[in-house]
Image (cartoon, rainbow, N blue to C red; front, side):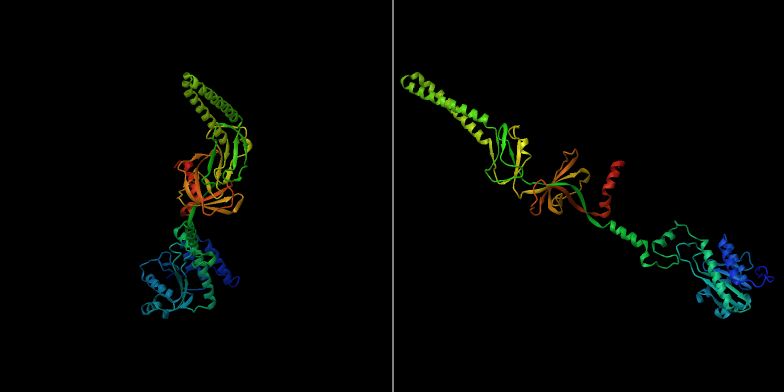
Length: 470
């Protein structure tokens, strides 16, 4: 076996400082560009730190990597095969640098020690690299360096060589650094492994934990809710319409006023009806006087008897007209048919305005007969079952929502005064409220249970779909 190359002698300048030699070897190992170059440096240039006769670099996955003084290794040679078995056995005995000899080997291997190696050996192992940064096949397997010579190893030499093997192994791992997109790199990161192969501290727990937590949060079931403008409206209002054609003359009530049954609400201009009634009464009186004169004449002359029937019909006609005009006069004074609250706009807009029969003038509703009306936009039309929860947050009382249960949702959308289409939703109150009819606010309607991710992405996905046309 050939002798490893030695560095030039520094006898002219005195002994070389071993620490300077170690620093030089560390610099050269960092600058090495390939694994064979690093292996050759380890088995040959380590001689500058401590003299030896033979050295061998062994990896547990691929066997002998390099031998001192040998350019190419013959893997089937008896010496190489024996060295592989020796290094494998030494790795099981020593996980730290240690002086070895034939006595550390079993019988068959110990018998051949004197044939192949000098008496004193030094085993320098390095541990397997399991960090995410080095996942190359050579870098992640354990191995070691075996040195042998005739003289015993001193503690100083063992310390220097142990430091050198650690520096060299660090450079060796750097040559097999895995790319950041490697599956094993990502797997180590997801499992929360640190660079030295250990577990991270609690505050740097595995990202799988946080990813799982986020997924669990996204699939957490929540109520699908939408917001829409709402208002308190009468549930079953009594509509008061114009009983006749005419002109409104006066209002006896104010908007939102409570009234009793039989209380006057409003009245029409009675001048025309009154004049017509007076004319009808005068005509009726004339017809009755004519009938009495004709009946007296009929007692003396039979020809007047034929006129009595005609005059009787005329009287009945006038009586019917008078009764009709009196009824119209009575109907022109509209009374409240029940107790309640009157709902209408400013009365000044009605006074002097001609109306037709059946035209709505105002509404009359009971004080407790109230419900919630919601206008649900087309984009917010979710599936709502009868009895769904509806909470109305009034603008005048946002901290005290009015609870209700959905009674029905209109099948067709209608045009709103603001120019948009919306579905009308009516909801019955759970408990009576002291808020008056007409108060507006924002209604929150609750649908079925959905994952949180759907609740968050429903509107964006709908917008994307409508934009892209899918």
